Length: 106
Image 1 (tube, helix red, strand yellow):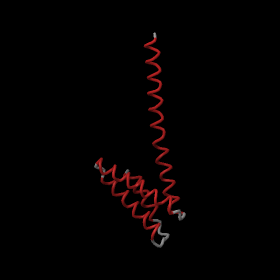
Image 2 (image 1 turned 60 degrees about the vertical axis):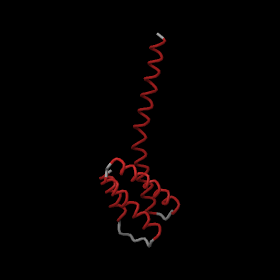
Image 3 (image 1 turned 60 degrees about the horizontal axis):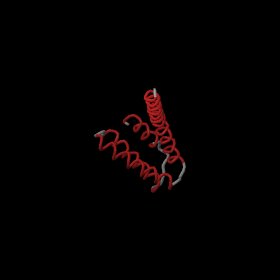
């Protein structure tokens, strides 16, 4: 009887953790894309520099996986972020193309 209770509690916690991990991943991606769009729309250099560091970690993970299409898309995104911060910004909608390429390849 005690074994069944412990097994039930263990399975309950295991499934609960599994559901939490699954539910946070899409939220993380959608919030990541929202932050990217904000970075391109408004000039917030500190937040954009943090996004560059985050995308650097992402592209290194994709390189380790061997996903070169995704890694290349992330590198293009980093280029656009750097261009947006340090150079004269032009309204040529490159950010939308870069983000859609990132979504497609990753």
